[in-house]
Length: 459
Image (cartoon, rainbow, N blue to C red):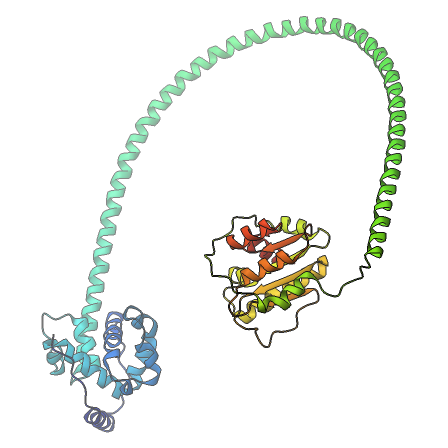
């Protein structure tokens, strides 16, 4: 195949202009479907080879499609430009004809080689439009229609042969079925004779069974009288058992009342013990002069986190702790619980398709709902070399912390856990195994990120 020929814009434009002025406008021919498909394939393949300024604006996007998608997705736009833009058709036709080699040269001369594919000749004639190009397209259409008629005739012949074969097969099957039916009829007649003999034997057995039934009826009447006497004896026994049951119920009621009185004594003792403990706690608070505080342990960690040395970065393995949101609800129901959340560990697992700002906003909003529902203290920690500006105000009950440069959110979470007094319920949500193992050693309850995500989805 010869190398592509770069068209010269000026001669092509002059030729197109002269052709438009000298040739009366004729309607576009109706192309056979194979010819139209071939024109689309040739134009789509040659489209990227044109300079960008020679490609119409509406086809520049199509030229960037993959080769296997260009004709399928951009065929309508290419066909419209080939029909409406003679200059574009002449430019791309010149390139396609040049790439066709000898066949393109023959078609440009108005000659259709005898051995050439008529569809290919018609497609090249439509693009190059030499003298007599409409006749070449009509000839290709005749050949295509003749091929289609031949294929249809061959299909009808094959269908007739198949119907004849099926008819012969059906006749053979019918003969076999007739033989089977004759054999079946003989067998049925034989079985009918046997059934008649069996019917006579059954009638005799029925008469004998009726006589046996009469004897059984007489025996049943005798047994019914005996059963009536036994039933009377059972009713007397039931009356005696009911009397004993009434005595047992009275004894049980007396036992229940005694147990209730004993429980009331235990409840009074327990109330007195709790009252004593409460008064002792009040006296101890008064003796130690402990008043309400406006800061919690996590607030001191948040104030001092900038002065703590950074912790070396460690590998983050996925924690294998439970991700059951029901377990998380149980922990958050403990009195004075403190929920600490590894922020980005949760958001990148649940909202990875959002920006970091949207991730933080969604998580903080959800945690605000949990804080409002449970009344627990909630702290969320994010990694960050410096505090993020423009962060919306945190909801009531939610503390938002960012690690300073040189420290990580993991280290800040460990500081928050170490700052809490022993015995306080601490729940740390992170799927980082190192974080989970570290906080567990300090008495906190580690939970996976999925447990919080499911809890937020349920809210």
